[in-house]
Length: 79
Image 1 (cartoon, rainbow, N blue to C red):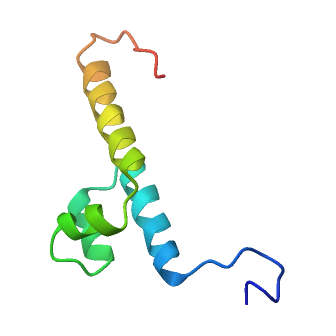
Image 2: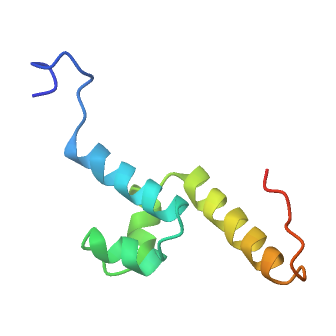
């Protein structure tokens, strides 16, 4: 289908990786992402699907959200 549409060929494995990376980066729980891919634990998802930068971005976002909640209403600038 990709070739017929003159688009880069994207495998189903690649789409699973995109799903995992985007879900983690937007803050979906690791357990929910693993379950959506049929994995028993997030270890498989992390090792084979989620991009490392997505995991890092999600961690940074979580820390900033926590700091924002405890900053007495003063917003903290996001990078």
